[in-house]
Image (cartoon, rainbow, N blue to C red; front, side, top):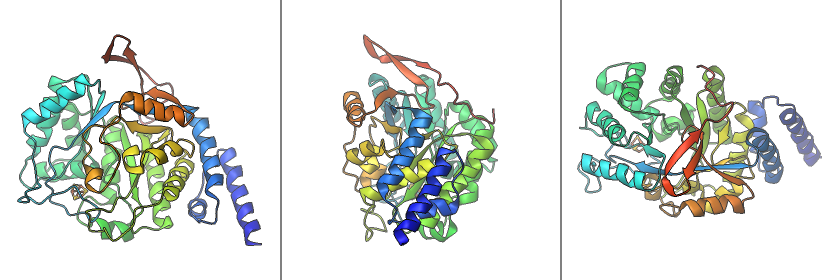
Length: 385
Ligand code: SF4
């Protein structure tokens, strides 16, 4: 009898998805019930994924830069941060930062992903200077930099508004913003994880302001720790509500929690089944976000490949110098070659397409891999501009 009820409820959701009707909070929570077969949710999410993005599996060629790991905050899930006087703490100098830009250029990277700690002693001018230095020396590389938590810290440092900080960063060379620092928005969870850093209101307001001045941003959710299904779905709906107003999010990235070396190391990391369920439910709930990314560094390569059939259309990049999740126990490689990443997308039955940060398609010169041009993606414009 119960199974029949579940089947009927799932049919209702299927009808809604096929009619392009929005799923509710109750629908999302229902889909997280382990009694609902994962394959059924996956098939529905795949239907939406193919409706939105066809058979494409996007990737990019990118590198990471974490200029410092010293951080005033102590988020319980973070294995990356360091205290000011801890021997593990580091601050990169200009020469090291320029070397990273040079290496990125030589490897054909279109993007640098730049995030780090909120250093007790480094002024705003140091953070701004990193963007300016890289942009002046490597103007072709898109700088996707600073989470909303960092922008909020810059507001505190400069005593200026969000808009001022974001426009000042853009003048220095900022191209777009990553989606980190969102964690879980619901205060029942956020207060347990990171009660001192930018709260949910501030995080959303930074992204709203970025969208209003024409900067595209990404959005994330860190799941698989102390939160419940209700908190996850609440998080997705808060993102969906902002996207309704601005249209500035280009991709959602569900981030699987890695417990090693964190203050939550007694927890287990989420299972592959939970990862796939979260990718699929994200695809179904976020009807107004174009792309869902299966971040292979966190999910592991096999789960990320499988996720391309569970709602994801992007697998992230080749990624050089990832520190944050490797410090927390990620066992994935430090970097994939372009051939590797294309091959794993092909193995998953998708057509590999190189994109830049804002989802323009990238065309490489046949005789010089490091030279490229882009072709603007159709129909992906920020609705606020
Ligand atoms: S997650 Fe970010 S803000 Fe929190 S402790 Fe780690 S580096 Fe600092």
